[in-house]
Image 1 (spheres, rainbow, N blue to C red):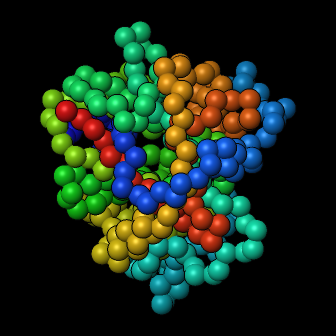
Image 2 (cartoon, rainbow, N blue to C red; image 1 turned 180 degrees about the vertical axis):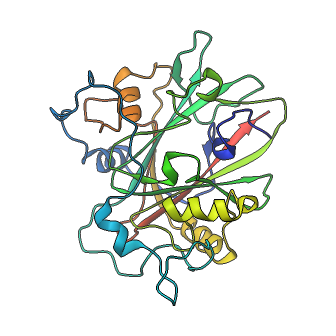
Length: 306
């Protein structure tokens, strides 16, 4: 299957069904409550929605760059995505009572009037359908999206050297649109399904620290300039094995049945201006939480296109 969106091969991502990740039966209120507890009760006074729109910054805070930058044996920054092995940047144990990390996903489908309508992720899509995903995390961290087609080799579709300055840092409860509703052209604001059916699988990796062996920011930009044919990046066998291992870790999940509502202005404003959501805002349709001992969450989403 091919999605006819011209964003850069990045986001053939999104209209999907929860993939094959082990799920732990959990009380609905517990999972959803654990994810939403860190949302503020009200929007901060500094969130001025009348101010000129500012592009969200997806680069990590400067204070973390020095400690997270990968070094080679000569002390220079490596631009090879396969230089480092494994997934997380260190193997330090999680601190006691650290908040569990989670991801919230809401799938929107374009209706006949051009509005974004909440849609069940298990919906079967057909030629001409258009979708967009709103992603929210409950902690600061790094988002990676890998894609496979018909169980083929994985490619990294986010971060991308041509998007967000190659950054992939998300702040807690600051939503992220895929693709952006603020794109210059209407055709770039949605993921469109063509006539080719197939199996698309998206791997969402959210980690408190950058993944080793996967370049981001200036390293990714430099790597793609040096070897344009090597981009989008294909993860090394070691990186991919580590991602698949993390994928087997149990997740707690909650899926809402509230569909058919239009995306709110506050959701769109928050995602396009880098503002945080509050408890007053709509909740994600699908929430997944990792265990208390995990610093990385991996989940797969399958796209149903016939």
